[in-house]
Image (tube, rainbow, N blue to C red; front, side, top):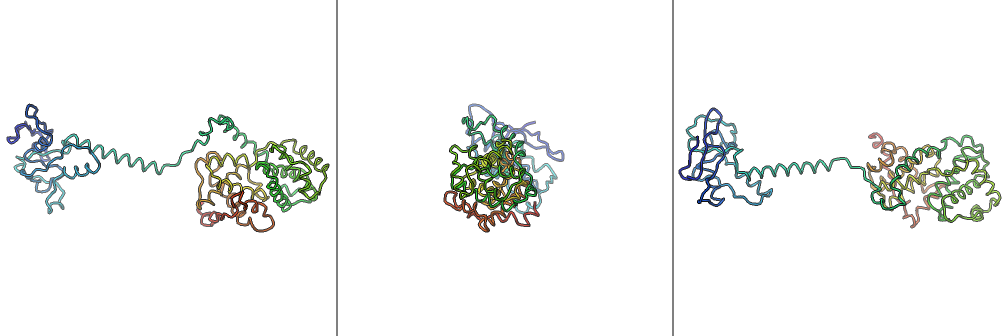
Amino acid sequence: MAGSDENNPGVIVPTNFHLPGGLRAGGGKLMAATGHNRRALSTINRDIIGPCAVNKRALSERNAICDKKNPPPIPVHRPITRKFAAQLANKQQLKPEPEEVKKPALSISSSSEFEDCTIIDVEDVPMFVQHTEAMLEEIDRMEEEVEMEDVDEESVVDIDMGDKGNPLAVVEYIDDIYNFYRKAESSSCVSTNYMAQQFDVNERMRGILIDWLIEVHYKFELMEETLFLTVNLIDRFLAVQPLARKKLQLVGVTAMLLACKYEEVQVPVVEDLILISDKAYSRREVLDMEKLMTNTLQFNLCVPTPYVFMRRFLKASQADKKLELLSFFMIELCLVEYETLKFPPSLLAAASIYTAQCTLSGFRHWSKTSEWHSSYSEEQLLECSRLMVTFHQKAGTGKLTGVHRKYSTSKFGYTAKTEPANFLLDARFSSQR
């Protein structure tokens, strides 16, 4: 059953809307008649409201009797913004009387008060209003998604993406190379107590020798990988060959000569090495020791040292020059210390970068990308990292200060003057882990 508005003959108001309690009142969709008397959108919007319109949400205990003379206008369609949508939502609800705000419950006692009123359901608002609400919900949903993306865990970065056009980067099989390094690094490790079989050489003498070789390496301006291979050759030789104390420096000089032949483009001549050792040995002694070392090591000079892992892990950490220098400072401090032999080369490299990052940033930092490429979590690096912090604290003290002096120069960015990451040694930090 539908009735027409005598004031607005072009508007048909259905009366089949069901109210609670079996009451019926006008409602449903409101349609404007079409014809030659087509009116402006603003006029139609005023007529749609009918003699009286009440939103269900605004009904109060007095049944929300409407003001027929001043019905709330509905705004015409205009570009929808968030501010406009909020204003529109406020205009769609009639303001209840002040004393009725405290009584939100709906109670309808009779239908006489609704005989001349047309009740517009929430679902029967104009289409552009529904579209506005849908847009608001979509905006809220997108904002929630953005907030969720902020708290999501970081993803692993493809560090080789920029080198796909560089044939020297061997992007196609770089991962296979480092998988092989990880499997082969055990062959470059030595027993952590090999000094027990040496009758005339001890740990302190080894530290003095390596500290001196670091200065020789710096004076000759040799490549970084040469130093790491030199130390590796010394440890592997001493682990299987008993040696007299007076021959220890000869072993160090010969190990550097072998490493230079393997890594350098221009190899220092034997006479230069004899001169740097204060002519303590002859040329023949150097060559004889070279023969003994190569045979003892079975000519196995191609082993993964911490340097090869340093380069890969620094790339994964997106290191700048400052972080790179501090990382090498950390790991060269470990070369002198005998107790770091218990750590494999890859772990030493990862721990040095982790310690350097913590030192520069002042807080713990180990990205998902670094963890992926190093295969070490932050927890696995903590023991070695704390040891490096103690080495950093005493780097400028005592007799073994070769690394500290080297990294106190402008060439190495005065890296040795950086304050240690003492918070890694905090007891509270240890208990939290």
